[in-house]
Picture 1 (tube, rainbow, N blue to C red):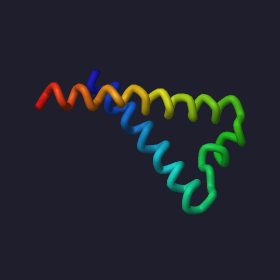
Picture 2: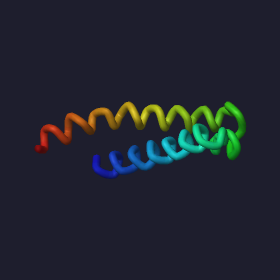
Picture 3: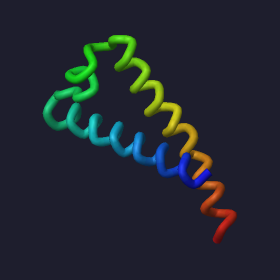
Length: 66
C-alpha cells in the first residue's frame, strides 16, 4: 500500500498547488488545461478529493506506528 500512499500524497500536493494558484493569482490550472468543469477536469477534482479523504487515514497509521 506504500505506492498508493505515495500516489495519493502526490495527487493531493498537485491539488494544493492548484489551490495556491487560485488563491494568489485567480488562475485555475486544471480548468486551463482541461476546460472549465469539463468531464476530465471534474474527474481530476474528484480524484484529488478522494485522495485527500483517503489520506485522513494516514493520521491513524502514523499514531499506531509511534
